[in-house]
Image: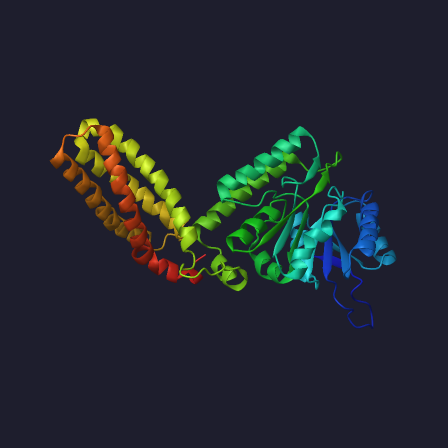
Length: 413
């Protein structure tokens, strides 16, 4: 990839000047009209309000108009302004290139239209400068944000973020706001895993950061929609859907070395006396899987009870839900990725199932030895027996079925 660079950090015959604390990248494509007023406004704000050394880097994504000439003029007249010209388009490509080459401690970017109020810039980067957080994002959907935009864009934005929550379990509120920052040492390790070179770059970076245990700081922003935005909504949406599918496959197969990144950069939970590390989260996830499994089990038992009798219905319902329960706990509760050991885990899960079957079937046998109960009483006894069986199942899964997988976690993703 060919590129040209103009930077205030270097000059012929001079030593390198002190690196800036913040490098703000402005990615552009054919922005000959808006670029100069944007950069001048941003430069004036930083010079007046930002208390640290800064740089503004214009990242030209293969513009075909006079954007490159405007960028060169700005680098020659404004101190602390640099420009990079890339031969290929792609916002993600531009950000990845500049961020990985920058010598600043904190790396940020914002859209050229400056839709986000600049008053949010210092709150965005301050937690990164202090070391409190690893990434920071401006959010148009967070409590306290003030947004002016049409109903169509509002619907698309909220729908996209709901889709991310449903497909990738994302917890951040706004993936695509053009106002983000990252610590340089985090970017050096995280960005090589980010494959997208376009608009999905932001989403992929944030999802991988979450999965690696990094802390993402959200800042509510004042944001005014640019009516002259050149983003192709349909093409961007299709690219995002392809990106979601690709990232889902990558996370499902365990090919990304997230565990190694988590070990290098992730924030471990604060220790609690008497509570093993990770136990609280495992209990919560196990409980959620258990509730879903129990409901499915009861529905199956009630449906099969008439035709098969209580013992047969109990056996079939418990076996069907046990297989699904083991798979869900493997993936969700104990965070085991990839296919390695899956059959062994299912076999061990069936042993755990046998223990549960003994508890529930034994309870039914005792009940029927004492009386001839109605179905409602049977269900009540089964619920109580299942609660006991659930506790036993969790202990067996934690200390036996998935113990080896948890011990080998640093080698997993």
